[in-house]
Length: 254
Image (cartoon, rainbow, N blue to C red):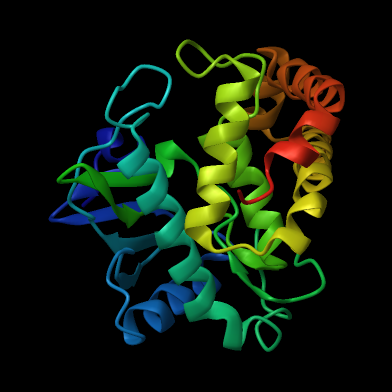
């Protein structure tokens, strides 16, 4: 029997992570099963459903915030994150188009090049031995172009934000980290110019999604907007516009 304390989700119980079953939970479970079947064990294993609860395995490792953790800010972590994201994209590319009709939390976007994680950020990975060893929280996964995931990844990992704390606050340092991420991912130069505008588009899409959910009655997104998340994203969109030319040049492989 679940207690009232268990409802603070997601939560860990009996070696499994439990969270409320949502309309997209079945697609997420099937996605994790597919990825694990490819031999990619850096993601949670699907553990099915118990009543209204979805369950996945717990991925061992250390979690940390990039704003305050020196190891999370390190180059080995940055590079290993990009490599792991590339592997994730490669392992799901073959099913993206066929799975576009399934129920996902975020709407699929053409072209269906892969199944994006949807929130590939430092707070959704685990560290072991100084590198990223696991990816967690696939609730926002959905079929989309690789650039859609890369755009948000650069926003969070560079991070391409005027709100970043030292030593990540300098735009030149952010551009260098973004370029290193794309190098490790293996993105060709000819595809990099589009990434700059994709980051802005990704933030605008996130803002629209938050407002739609708030209008539909979501307390979570209403609270996020009241606490200033929307203003933060709008400020970062303006920040990206100010530095667009430097980003276009700086992201090219050298």
